[in-house]
Image (cartoon, rainbow, N blue to C red; front, side, top):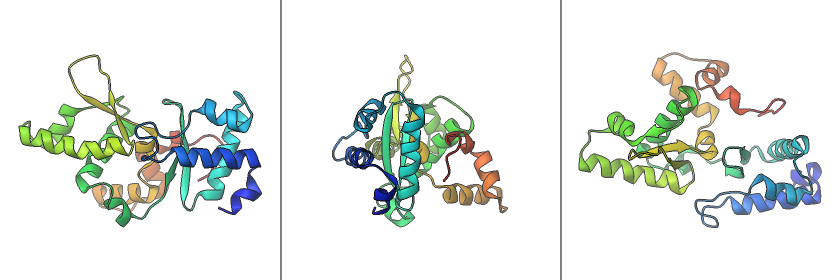
Length: 209
């Protein structure tokens, strides 16, 4: 965290700490992070894309080993996500929840579907029985609690879910690489994996990992 002082102004440090604080599920359950307008107010800028994204890039360069700051333009939220080892992640999400999230990730980030229907999850993970319904809903609940997915209004009786920016960024590049290699039974380059998952469109021009 000491590296922040050399890369950020005092106002930018304060903005980052406010984003970090507001990204806690225990502080703002279901409403993670700050809006762009709130961040810009802290930075004393208004509608200046270059300065706003420069701030995000420099913060990420300073804290990339431990965290990642992301901007969800659809929900208009700036969020801090913490990097944790797989063993620690398993204490937060079950393998069933992770499977559902990966299925939705593939549908929405690769196939470019706007949302995933609950019936599609039933078809993929179980038969349409009361027990299957309850099991899937039980494993969807923690995904909603950590802000990875949200309910999507289809203007019909069908229940549907949409990934948030948190859900999109949950899986690391190394995890996606291992998953794709396992499914295809051969070793792939990072570029092939990113292309497969269409992750290239998630990075801003000039942004580095």
